[in-house]
Every structure is written in C-alpha cells, then in structure tokens.
Image (tube, rainbow over all chains, first blue to last red; front, side, top):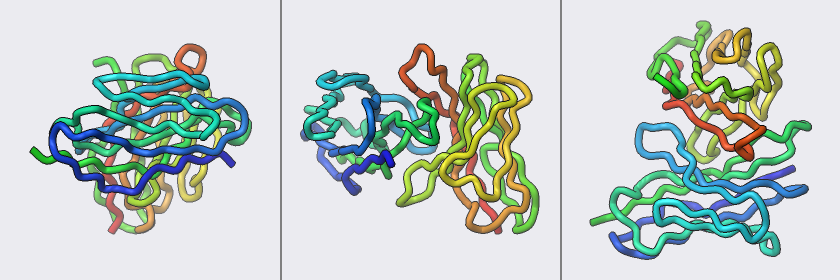
Length: 115
Length: 114
C-alpha cells in the first residue's frame, strides 16, 4: 500500500543553519504531497503542498519539490529560526480503501533550533 | 468562531468507561477524519466520513465508534476504554473538490486511560 518514510529525529540545529528533512514515498497513481507542521501543544497546520511532478511548494521560507523520479519530497529551509522548532510531517494523499481524500502520514521529525 | 474545534481538550478516564470526543467544524466541509497520534507511529487514521450519514473505517478502527448525523459534527466514542487508547486524538476536515485533499486540523484531545 501507499506509505511515507521520513528521516528519524530529532534534528538539532543552530539558528541560521540550513535545514533538510528527507521524505520519500511509495504510491500508486499520482498523489499530492504535503508537509504539515505541528507546534508544541497544537494541531497540525499545512505548511506547503505540491500536486504534480516537478511542482515546488513553498511557504515561510520552506520549500519542497515533488520528484517523481526519486519518489521524494524533501523539505528545505535556508536559514532556520528558533520559532521553526516543531514536528514536521510529510504526507501524501493516497488511494486507501477506494477513497481518494485521505492522507497518509510519515512518523514525523522533531526539529529543535537552538539560539 | 470559524474553524474546527475539539472538546474536551484533556480527559482522564478509567479502563472500561465510555468516552466521547467531540469535533465541530464551521466550514461545511464534506469530509471529516479522526486520527490518533502516538510516538513512533505518526498519525493513524481511525475513521473518516465523506458526508453526513456516511462513515468508513481507517487504519485502526477497533474499539471506536463514530457517527455523523450533521455535516458539522463528527463525535468519536470509545465504547469501553483501554489503556492502549491513551493517545492524542485529532479531528480534521477537508473539502475534496477544491483543496487537493488538504485537511484542516483541530487542536487535539489528550486522552489518558488509567
């Protein structure tokens, strides 16, 4: 079945460092891909998305490119801030039991940014 | 207030008791979802609903019951709570037609079963 694999955390960085969180997927068909962010004590929020191959999603300085050839959707940011500390989830919309409007999540990656 | 709300935010109960978690959304989204979040598992889908009176099982439905008599409400009931159901529960909603499966999440309910 469809699945998402993302790198284990925690990822600990100093402020202004470059961030990469790896995400690869397995899916039939052509899923949409998402990055969600969860700040401490809150629900998940959509960070960015890409709906077809070679699309680049971007928001708040974060970027991710939908790479069909490598089945990847890695999250990057050039200069992280303390306020970026959160758990990041990669997800895809997949075919699951016949319905298309469902998300399959990775296990999440905790990012801790130190001043 | 517009958005998606969950209640209660925190709940402690005992093994064997029935517990109902509430979810309410004001967007009139057709789809609603219940997830549980556990360390090492990410989010796992419990049940979902495509419209009022239409519900279906997700990945981990055992021990849970849902109903959806109105579009805006999607309660989740644990009929006889077990310790393994200690978790953080998130409700989400989405509208397939215009959002490429984007989902909007509530703030979560932290449930502890003693």
